[in-house]
Structures are given as C-alpha cells and as structure tokens.
Length: 213
Image (cartoon, rainbow, N blue to C red; front, side, top):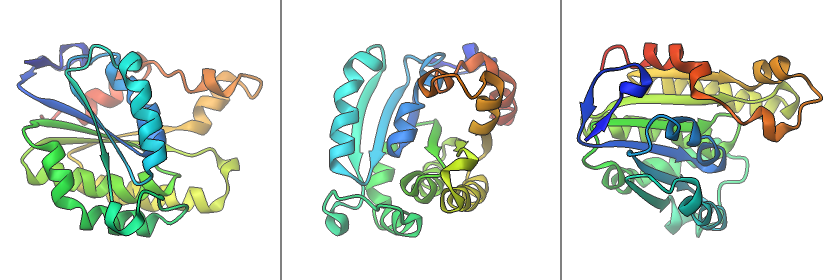
C-alpha cells in the first residue's frame, strides 16, 4: 500500500508508478521520491546508452523504491540511438511502442509522468505515456519542466507543444518553470543547486493536480 499523505492527500493505493521520460525526466524523479519512496519507479528513454547510465545510478538514488525498471522505447526503429532533437519522431516511436508502455504501467492506480519539455524525448513521449496510463484506468499527473529561455527557440517551442499535448492527456498537471528557479536563486548559483528542488516548494501545485483523485 502506498500513501499520498505526505503530498497532502489522505488516500492510499495498491500501486503508484512514477515515470521519468528521457534524461531530464529521470533526473527530476527525485522530486516525487522525496514524498513517495515506496512507489514503483520507471525510466523510459529512446537512447540505450542514456538509459543504461541512468539505471546504473538508481540503486543508490532510489534505494527505498518499491521497484525500479528501465524501458527502451522504439528499439526496432531507432536501434537505441535516440531521437536527437526530433520531438515528432519521439512521439511517433512512443505511439508505435504503446503496448510496451502499457505493459510497464500495468497495475498502477496512479501514474506520475515527469519530463523535461524542452528535450525531444520528453516533449514527444510524455503525452503518449500519460494517455496510456489513462487507458489502463490510472489517475494521471503530468509534470512538465519548461526550459530556460537561453536554451534556444527550438527547445522552447518543443516545450510549448509538448506541454499542450500533455495537458490534454493528464488528469492533473504541474508545470515548473526553470527560468523562475534561476531568477529565485540568482544567476551566480551553480546549476546543480538550481536543480535541487524541494517538493514542499510545489506542494500546492501537486495538491491542485491531485484534487480530483
């Protein structure tokens, strides 16, 4: 049994899964782990090297997780080489891998889908994962990290398009603006510190996203 009490929602569920889409999604799964150690954690990626590297970090990073698994998406088409900067390709291979995604989510009553929306993998894949979660009857929360403005117009547009699609396929949404974090901590703050996010800073956003659960 997994409780959402620490997120401000007094409800228990047999199975909650947290999915990190792409490398940024993986890096930010810790935001949920701070309050949901007992959940099952799933890393999904289109690049085999990135997936292997991130899974290697999981033993220490998520040592108390209910389970930890990795899923390589689009292997038949991409051969583990990733989608580079093509969010449309990421969405295409995710759609073609829908059954694989559903199998990874099976049994979940609640699914958190985390993605960096500026990257192609996160922007293209997250909405398909969220829609797959809803298909199995899970309450689905999308968590989108919007890129820094200096990352360029391509990543910003990826993020805008990806977030709109994610909103359509999620029951609740949490949007985290990285530029706001940078402004909060100051431009002299090391980027690693900027990314050390605390769940409590976003508790109200999560409570809103979970209000209809």
